[in-house]
Length: 190
Image 1 (cartoon, rainbow, N blue to C red):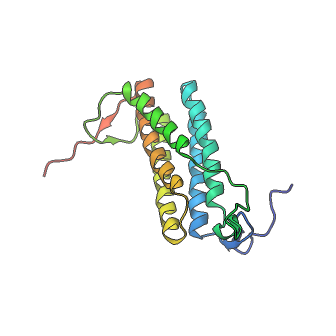
Image 2: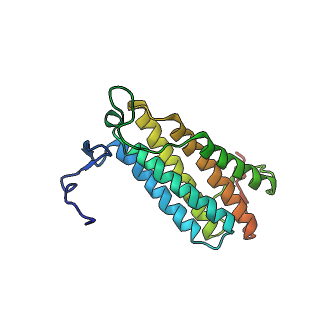
Image 3: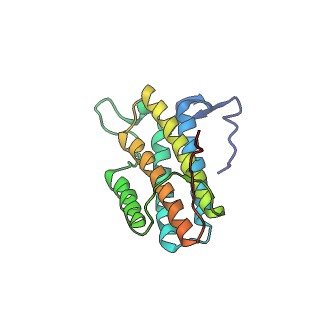
């Protein structure tokens, strides 16, 4: 299979199901940002972090491919008139969200309480987590805009929201693991 097809040379791309849309379509922006997020998670996984976090990140990357497939699917082509699914698209389910919450709870149990906002940084790995968190928030913003125009499965929105929280807590955990300093944001007094 060739990587280049030349079908996008005029600025359009195909959704899962065959519908062609402009490459700047909000659906493309949504799953493109999820793809960018997935790449950052791959970068974090290549850092010297604990094996458990690497396994969880690999699982999340798998879920992001599923989420991307959901977003890349033309809803009009996803189901038949009788309501049955035409395309075999996996789902994001409550268990996926629960995993993120459980992992956050475990990490928070060993972290110091937060009393202030924390400035992103500390070391390279922690900074990658903060970048991934902000890309996740952008993916969430794009996807909520898509949802206003073409409703999508609410589990997708919940997952992205929970994932950005997970990445914040992971950044704090990795700060602790690597003895990186967390710099609190203390607003200037007027």
